[in-house]
Image 1 (cartoon, one colour):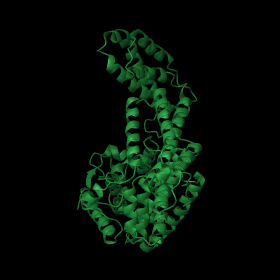
Image 2 (cartoon, one colour):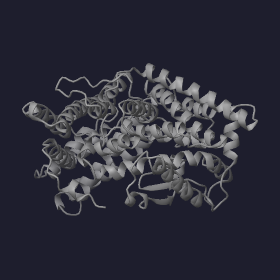
Image 3 (cartoon, one colour):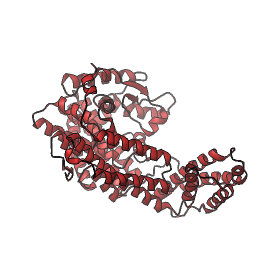
Image 4 (spheres, one colour):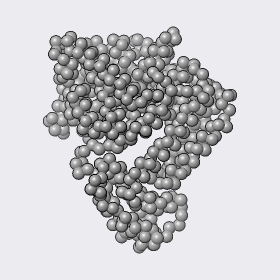
Length: 535
């Protein structure tokens, strides 16, 4: 049934419209100034965020509804976080500025174009020539992390330069006459320079640790009061529990230890062509479990709307396991893979690991999140946090374990493997970003302590530090799961139901878990409310 009454309701909330305007205007600024190294972009965004900070204080907070008060607090937190991130980004560029002295002049050249300024072709040629002459030699003692950062900046400004030339070259005859030769020389030189800055081994995993101060700032932006060391201790305690449960499962199977139990699970994998049917059946099983146990409302259109696609060998190189949302991307070897890669993909995506992954990706996991995000308070998606995204799915792993979802020893091993993996993610991601561990040490941990296949462990670390994930993302699985699970426990202690909690969680949409806790448990919401939560 379509909830017409809900859709036609006339809420008194005012913040949704304000936040929708903020998001639209911000997106317009970022489209207008797309170059992340542009001082003009930095200035425009900083001014925009600070203007909104001042505007927030003029809003009638005392007259607001509870949802509006929550949004006001979340908005203030978002603005503070974004200004801090801009400052960190600027500082990170300054660390490599001597390696890339050409970035700002070339960025200014393109900014002038985007500002619709008339071009002086002869002067532009001079900028290109000076940029060419300014490309330095690679320092012999260059740190790989700084080299990689400088390479990314070089490749970014090279794309900016190409866009600039595409705009003028072949159209403006004076630009073509003055600039073609210096442009072509500069384009080639920048590409070569970027290559020299990168490690000679193209498969090397480098990453760029953010440091302790940035980790603390990002944790505070999620209202988490713990230090990295305290979070590592929490993860280690959960790791010890996992190891004890693995030993118990091993004994049930008559195996000598937990590592042998994990190996037994790996051996029970599908034959070629059978993985699709397995995923279909596991999806239906998970949906039936949450519905039969009245854990979550699953709308019919969601129950029937999920899809499946097979992951390419290239994608499996970066992500060796399933990905999900409305569509689940299934990992299984293809006929084009090398023999050892095929075997590792089979073992790493065996029946029992897969059973613990399918509900994470689809229902009740990520698919249910995306389904509700589009339908309830969608403007809150700008409050995105991995602790909400991945914490929800890990809470379900905790809850399904407690409610008897794993029925056999091998099924328990499948769930324990992934939970142990989440513990390792906290350790290796924090150790790496604190500058204490290398990527190889992170890989070794996953192989030796968790039981990953070597190639799968390498892909996991490559994905973690490749630049597409924020520094807290990998630890947010377990830590976010602990937050959501603790909140769920408090909710049940108040006499309410599982289904009511999970439905309410999804309907409020994205935000840091401590903020959601304050709202769902009817805590006071004032301007000076401290949302930090020792869970």
